[in-house]
Image 1 (cartoon, rainbow, N blue to C red):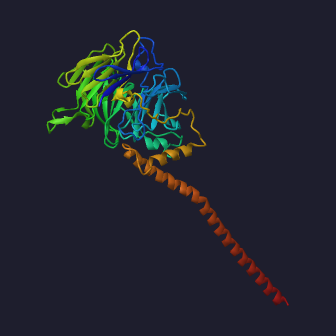
Image 2 (image 1 turned 90 degrees about the vertical axis):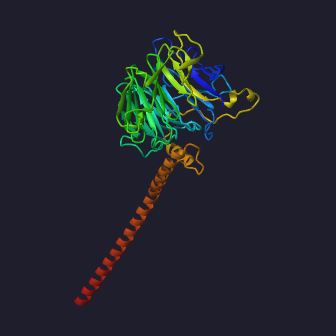
Image 3 (image 1 turned 30 degrees about the vertical axis):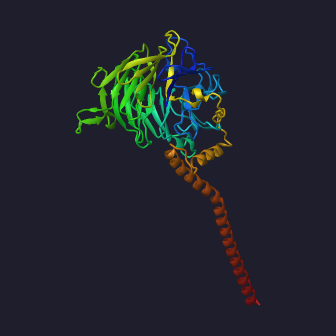
Length: 468
């Protein structure tokens, strides 16, 4: 199946689509306002503000909706592949510095420069939850492959793991009514610029994070344990890992892409070892030892975004020099450059490799495609409907026919739903039980009073009889 490259072209801020194999331009989504305006303003300041959403229940089908948060505006623009102009423009509470969409296409998460997270349901536009997640700007938001958690990286040098079920529920907060993270991964010394989540269920997957401190750290997601630290010769801005998690690629501020083999010969007992399977393993690549690290050279400025083809044979990189390059991974050769190059103005970013959407196929002309259901996002949480919205999400995710790829999420939501139901049942039955107990006590007191009065009357009768 044909693959395409989607990226923001900094020269005109359009969201462009190219054929991965030929470099032919297929589409340009217009109406985006993201131009940085000068050479010194790095794309890191723009943020990872492009998100592609699948149709819920479509499995691994190509994304059908495109979301882009606007720079210096508290707005989101949305497109589909059928029109160049935005389908919708709507106002949100704050300007977003990063965005992420669940793999199922159900949820949209936005992070702000103030460190706040907003969680929306895409189909209804409901603002499910808004909470403080970091002390500084959030640079990246990524979902795990099973959608049971999402990960945020920030300028405060922290990586936080948030369990979706606990983030949505009202019953997993502290005394200050704040959402609690599952793990806070503190190991970087400077801002975290990018994060990628490994494949598999959340219990077994790993997190790969890069930072301006020139290190890449590998974490065990479920336990939060630091497994490995890889040290490079320049600050790092982007990262991608192949589906088998054998090859790691990081983009540096110097314009060089470093490639590390995570499975190689070493001094372990079995000869071959995995770099990401140790605890507190440290390896220094700052000397550029060719035996352990390979480099891709061709960009003239920092590498702000990376992605791989689905078979990991092609690497696509976007840079602040305005160029987008498709590389052959095996030979490290630059196969082609995409888009225009104008180093004085352009800063390409937010590169993604996806399967070619059906709407862009040449044989799709004349076919009526149904639009994915979505509504403009709400700006405020509704206090009167917050419980109703929460119940709606719980009921949807705990249905008998869970969406493919969301088994872990359904299991967690099912457990919480049972807890919610039990709590509500107790709350409903408690007043009746208390009333029943009070009524029984009143009857018992009345019987005691009647017995006491009868005894007093009999005693008075006896006294009067004796006097006579």
